[in-house]
Image (cartoon, rainbow, N blue to C red; front, side):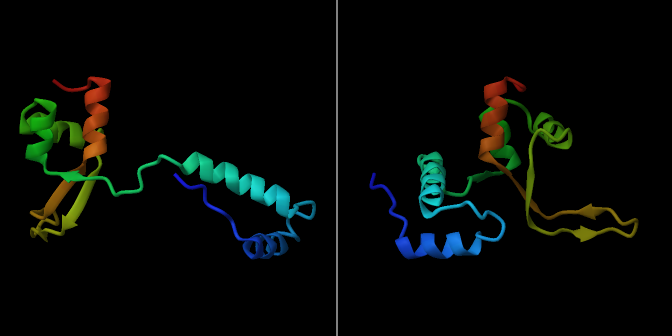
Length: 115
């Protein structure tokens, strides 16, 4: 993988912009800080997390759909709302399309919270 090179002009502009709040900041210090930040970011997944349905998530965990819903209601899984449902006369929302992050499901597998 090729190392990203920070343009000199960008370092100058950033150093000038930060001069009031960080008077001792030099271009070299800024370059070093940015290089450390870039190295920390290398290897991180930049793709968005895959979403799975409740049925697929339950199948991946080896549990029933009802148990999967209980985990979601307990806050162990983050719901991602795709479409909004409609509201009943009493104000409760019904319907709509919800998915769950695959990384949340994998985290539960790793922690052994299900199955």
